[in-house]
Amino acid sequence: YGLYCLSAPIPSPLHRLAVLLPASEPGRVLGELKEQDLGATLTHEHFSLNVVNEFFREPPSHLKQFFGPKITLDTVGYVRQYPYGSRSNITFFGKEVDEAVIKEMHLFKSYGGGTIVENTSHGIERNLDLCYRVAKETGVNVIAGTGHYVNGSQNSETLSMTVEEISDLYRSDLTVGHAVPSSPNMVKCGVIAEVGSSWPITEFEKRAIQATAIVQSELGCAVSFHPGRHRAAPFEIIRIYAEAGGKIDKADLSHLDRTLQVIEDLLDFAELGTYCQLDLFGTEVSYYMLPPEIDFPS
Image 1 (tube, helix red, strand yellow):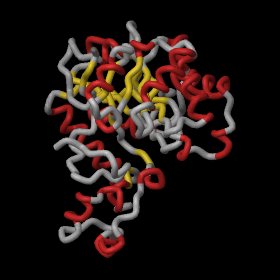
Image 2: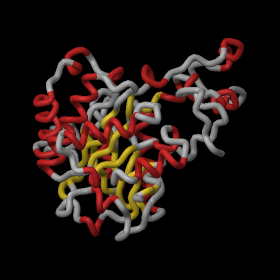
Image 3: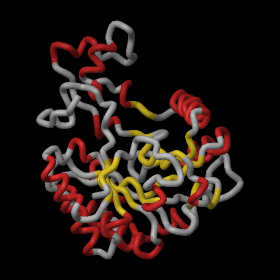
Image 4: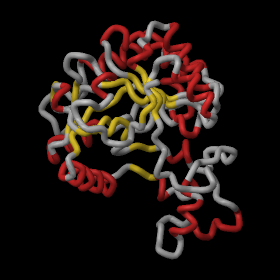
């Protein structure tokens, strides 16, 4: 059925990313990348992003005293139980984060890692300069993503964009690229990821999905979707995407372990032919704040 776990490294040359990416040469931030050179690949990662406003949830009122600006030894237990109640815990950008990411990628490389697919998209402060520096300094292949994250992370100007304007942006990110301080050349994206939507899917999010399909059908690139937290969301995303001309076997749906929690739903969805991404293992909490009615298996 194409069920797989994207956050686990899958040894080359049998890893599924080779199926998702264009058959010729997937783009990376340092230039073109041959399929056989991908190596062990993590296909849904974020080096740096700003989701504080999107993800923050107030901790229980009687525990607020333990959620200060810094995480300390005597408060870390509370943060583990309510991770989205600490702004410090969900701050993933800045110099300190950049330095930590580069150290981690050196470790990733030393343990046999080959490629990272960086899924940070428009609306949550994608950092292409950091992507370039990671690739240059560590030797890890980095494939950067384009797309738009969820409606709530976009400004009013972005929310007014037409399908044609969104398509032009994605196409440019993939074929022209961006100038960044650390690189003498334009840095291009190699995948449309991640394209986020809420539930119900908003009009802007529908246009972003349609634009994704248009550009995917033109360029043959892989795409990755972030669904809203409702069991109908993945099905609706693929319906919109397919009707706009997107190739289903080039798409994957992220976070299905918190979206399709009944095996029959997961199997029904897998029949559509997309990749099914189970990627939230490691979120070892008994109480899921986003939203609390979802239970995570241990």
